[in-house]
Image (cartoon, rainbow, N blue to C red; front, side, top):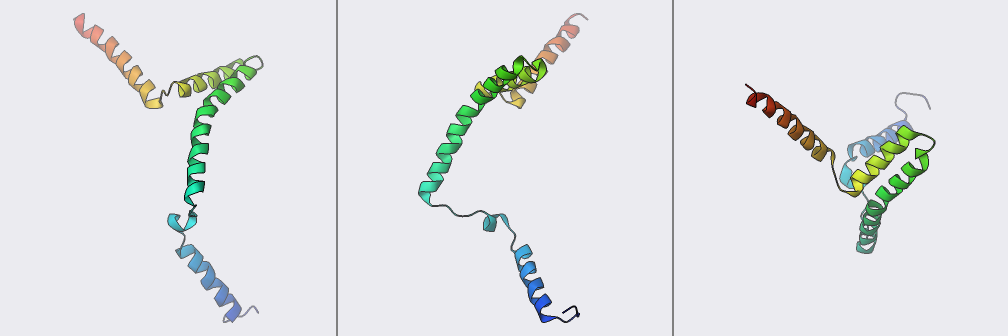
Length: 108
């Protein structure tokens, strides 16, 4: 049972090695029928539409008890409703910085 050449142990080890070697993303994702794929896409669209509203509502509810957390949730919900991304905000910040740096060059 505990010997080095135990056939049961060797058979179990090969099955585990096969599972580890065949562990690729294609084998892990199950193939869904076309009807279920369309249903999944529909649910993703509905979730994408409703989640910003839910975030804003939760932020409004928490606003009285926790001003900072509620305000952050409201801001995140509004930004996601307006489809404003992180890159857009950094682009605006860079434009504002460039406006201030241009003012210094005109004064010289």
